[in-house]
Image (cartoon, rainbow, N blue to C red; front, side, top):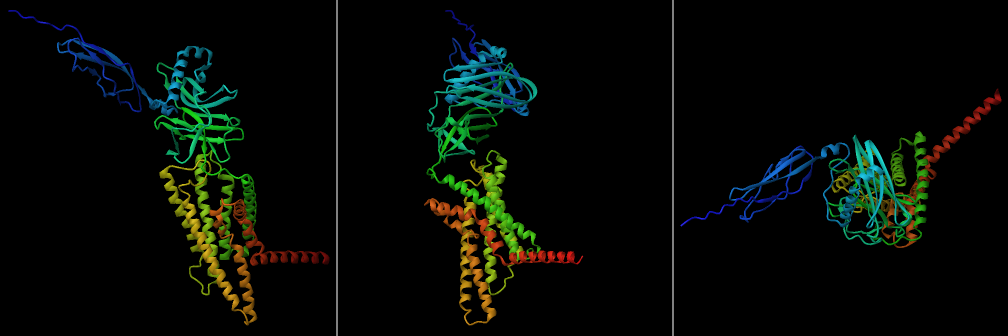
Length: 581
C-alpha cells in the first residue's frame, strides 16, 4: 500500500478591470468596479478576489493603485493591479466648467462620440495646424485648439453641404491658463426635415403632450475639452444661428424652438435655452454644450385668417391712440387743482393710471421673451395692472350706483375703494405667482400667463364684467323710473330730471369703459366682423375715457372755461394799463 499525493502548484489566473475614472465633488468618493475575472485549473467555482483598497471604498482625489489578490484552496495566489482616477469636479465648477454628464445610448450622441475619437487620434496634427475641418460619415466637423485664460470667446464657422454655413460662439470662463480642444459637428442625411419627433419633449421641465414637434434642421453638436493627461469635458455657454430662409415649412401660427437632447430624460428639452427669431435668422442660446436642433412646434389652433396682420396693425394703432388719449386725460386731471378733491375724479385717475400701465406693458413688453427674468416680471405686472383696471372699472360702476341711490352710504369712501381695488388683485397675483413658482413654468412665446394659469385673469374679469353689467342695469333702471315721475313737477325738479337723463346718456357711453366689450370675447373666432369689433372697442377704451372724462365732463368744461375767462380778463387788464400809460 502506498499513497499518491497530487499537489496543486499552479497559480490561478486573475484579470483586473481597466482603469476606472470617476468624477467627484468632494475629497472622498465611493468608487465601484466590475469584479476581476478569476480562473483556476482545479478550483472552478467559488473563487473570489479581494482588492485593496476595497470595492465601494472611499477614494481621495487623484490616482490610486488598487491591488487585487486571489487564493485557491491549495494556497496558490496571484495578483493584478489597476488604477482608479478620481477627477476633482469642484475645481472646474468654480471656473465655470463642469465634469461630463452621464452617457446615453442615443444613436446621434454615440455617432458624435465616435467622430470625436477620430479627432482625438489626430490631436497632434490639430495642435500643429490649430484648426482642422473633417468630413466623416454623415458629418461635417470642425476641431480647433485654443489657449484660454480668463474670459474667452471662441468662434467657429462651418460650410455645410447645402451651401449654407453654421456659425457659433462659445463663452468660457477660466482662472488659469489651459489648452482647450473645441469640437463642433453638423449632421446631414440622418434626420428627415419636417419629420415628427418621436422622443419626448420637455418644455419648462414639463412633458409636452398637447403640441406636435417636427425637425426643421439637422443636429448640431458641440464639446469643449481640457487637453492634458486626461481629457476632461467642460461646460460652456453656446450661441449659434440658422438661416431662416432654409426653414420654409414654418406657418404663421407655428413656433420655431431650439432644443437640446437631454441624456438623463432621454428626450428633447428647452432647459437653459433661449430662442430668438429675427427677420432672416433663428438664433439659439444655451448655457451648456451638448447636441442641439431647431424644431417647429405645431399649433393646434386653426391657421389664421389673412386679415390677422391687419388686425395686429389695427390693435397697435388703437393702443397708441388710447395711450395718447389716456395721457391727455391724466394730464388734465393733474393740471386743474379744482379737480383734485373730488372722489369721483380720484376714481377716474386711478383707473386711467392703471390702464396706461397695462397698455404700455402690453405694447412694449409682452414680446420681450429673450430676457427671461424681465419677462417674468413683465407678466406679473401685466397681470396686476390688468386686474387693477378691471377692479377700478367696477369701482366706477359702484360709485354711479351710490350716486343715484336715495340714501348716502358710509361705505362710499375713497379708502374703501383703494383697499378693495388694489388689495383684491394683489392677493390674486400673489397666489398666482406662488403657484407659477411651484410649478416652475413661464410661457415662452409671450410674457403673459400660461394656459393653465389664465383663469387667474379670466375668472376675476368675467366676475367683474358681470357685476358691472348688473350694477349699470340697476343704475339705468333707477334713472328711467325717476324721469317718468317728473311730469307736473316744479321747474327745479324738472331741471334735476334733465340732469338725470344726461347721466343716463353718460352711463350708456360709460358701458365700454366698464369692460362690457369683453363679453364678446367668447364669440371672437366666429366671424371676422366680431374680431374687428372686439379690437376696436377694447383698444379704444382710452379714447372713450377721454371723451367722457374730459370732452363731455361738466367739471372739466367749467375748469377750462374759468381758466380761459381768467386769461381773457388778464389780457384785457394788460391792454387797459398799456392804453392808460
